[in-house]
Length: 453
Image 1 (cartoon, rainbow, N blue to C red):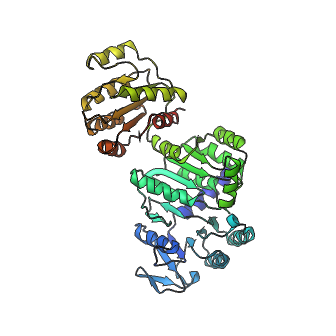
Image 2: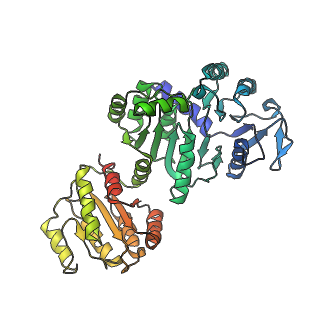
Image 3: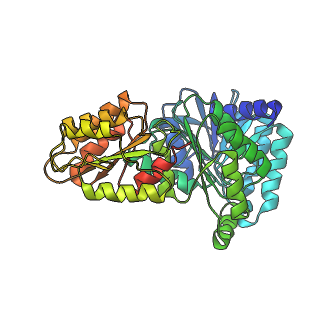
């Protein structure tokens, strides 16, 4: 990607994602409607810029003044968010051109995804005439947690964090937000592209590469509009930040569904996946794996594949060793010096080998001591720490030990906790301590593979 196109895309996306003022055309006080939900979220998000509401049929909404027309707003508007029926969108875009707005988020559906390509093309032509860049149409909007700017219609208030999510699917954004809230995972930006009539993943990637709040970028991708441009952008960005991609439409029925969903041609799966990997993307196959991978990058990357497994349950340790091996990781024998150190304080019925079975009564002190010894072993690149509820020790102590070691070690550390109510506190401690925690041997092992460079 040339420096000119990089600078241009960065400037245009920055203006859209970090606006000084926003006008919502189609604002409403009815929160069960899209326009109402967006209005509520925008006004309640804590955004410090100006928000203008536009609706010819209302005087005040949520106690705030409403303008009958976009052009009646007396001040400059950076971004217009459009929530009106599709046939009215060209008229609103003409007003935006006269108002000298430079960014538009079109929530309205009823364009190329339902075969109305000409209507979508008309909107694009108007935007090009006025130098307006578009996100959408047929999208759920965007969220910038750093600014407290929520221009979406979700009911789940996002937590601040360092993960950015780009998606063609608005529903996937909503579902991800709900999952994130339950699991206390924070995000930096949500950018829903919808039909991608103008701005696409490439533009969003260029912006997010330079966004200081964003450390990890996740993408849900259906169709690819410009393969070469996307390849260059991923190649450009992945050298600085992990780019995780969930590619949909990889089968004939899936490709057909993608076409009717966002009007996207999905592309030949083997070629697309090969090119994305070559560009440096980390590919995942489903939403669960996407969520697991998003969390794992709170840990440093690893140049080696050697995993040490420590556990209070031999059976789960064996299962995890199996999964690590199946997925291409190594579970090596530990050096004799390390084994001797462990034998010096572990119970006689414990196993000091890799996997290390500390037995069911392993508490805070035992976890902490074993983790410290293992983390200092040069033969180990990645550590997986397992706890299963057995009625002998609560999950709090082991979780605290894992968090403390994570703060001291420069090696990636992942946790696997098995149980129900009895491990809730431990999981919460791990979440707040920045340690990714998983609920199965397969999931924790698969997440570990993403960290290997």
